[in-house]
Length: 324
Image (tube, rainbow, N blue to C red):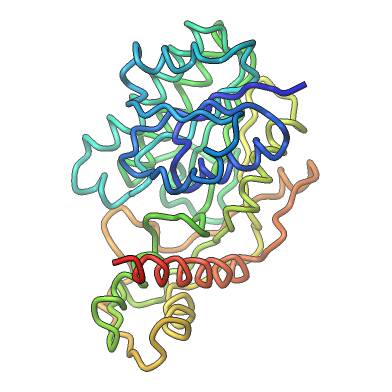
């Protein structure tokens, strides 16, 4: 029997891949997205499936979001909450973006659960909640002091959801992502490098000195991790880092990979300094041993994920360029 899911941010980078995976399970997906970052193109394939519905509305508009939930014909298995401002730099420029798009959407998601009797939430959180801590970032670390508005609003969202388990929710699964790469992404280092080379094919400007180094996970692996967290972990409040946890990739290495595929004769111009931009954590190690011990690991290392994503996004940008 098909399960029914509410998926916020359904037309976004990660949300659209999760929608595809849930549909492949034979489930029903009711998507909610304001299309500020997501696109209908991302869910073009899903939209041909009669078990998928996309409602274009702001999650914070509770009457409209509630009307979308009411299109479900049966009990709702899970609310997957992926709606957020995923562009950290945009939140640095305008803190209201993270408050409205990240925290208020979470508050509204809890209200939807209360109104419609939804008892289980899977929440897309982030490594940005940790801030700059010494040593590998593990789930038991604390206190947490984020250095970006994005991280702060994600941490506040985690607290809002865990508080809801005292009455509204039976279970909350918090999945903390590292840097996620792959097809359909709208921002991030690979996306930025490709856009810069499209403007100046002979020169790639790289923020910082290139030594920034982080773990990356491919979106296909991340979606498998999300499904594992939902269907193989039974805890009232589950909080897990998702990722490889053993490997990472430097900005300089990503720059070289992008240049090789897009503009082999381009030179790299570093702006200098150890930090790319305000709010950026230049390097960190991710401890994913807890989720690995439960039985899930990604299929790709960090650099394998980045390499595949560079190929995917290069192909997408070439196709997009041919349309203009």
